[in-house]
Image 1 (tube, rainbow, N blue to C red):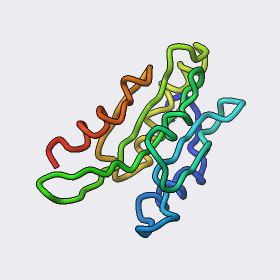
Image 2 (cartoon, rainbow, N blue to C red; image 1 turned 180 degrees about the vertical axis):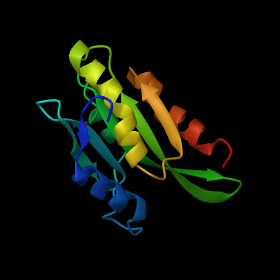
Image 3 (cartoon, one colour; image 1 turned 90 degrees about the horizontal axis):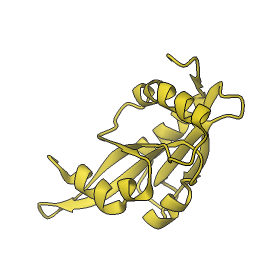
Image 4 (tube, rainbow, N blue to C red; image 1 turned 30 degrees about the horizontal axis):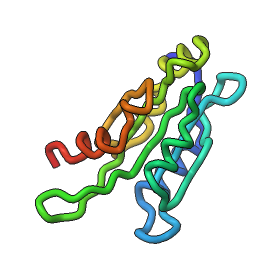
Length: 141
């Protein structure tokens, strides 16, 4: 917690639900986290079940920093696989203070999410494109 920002217990609960959830319609596909209005805590902003990657991208604001965990499904060597990707979203349009607190708080959130296989940092949508996520997830699996 180098920034002094705490990780809300709801973040860990939502992550465990995504990670351990049963295969089915109610399983989370992604969770988006953000700073609260006073910059003191990281909280869940959005939890979504089965949805498209395009919907996920629409939930990443153009001018606000976010963190996300996305359950990446892919096929490799004839088998279906999945990995959890941690995305740190810091768009160029975000306010400087938010970017600074976001950057110094990322490690606290990331360390609390056990089971992440892929890490991605994005400042624009091309850096978090579906192809980028798939390519990183399918490496070495």
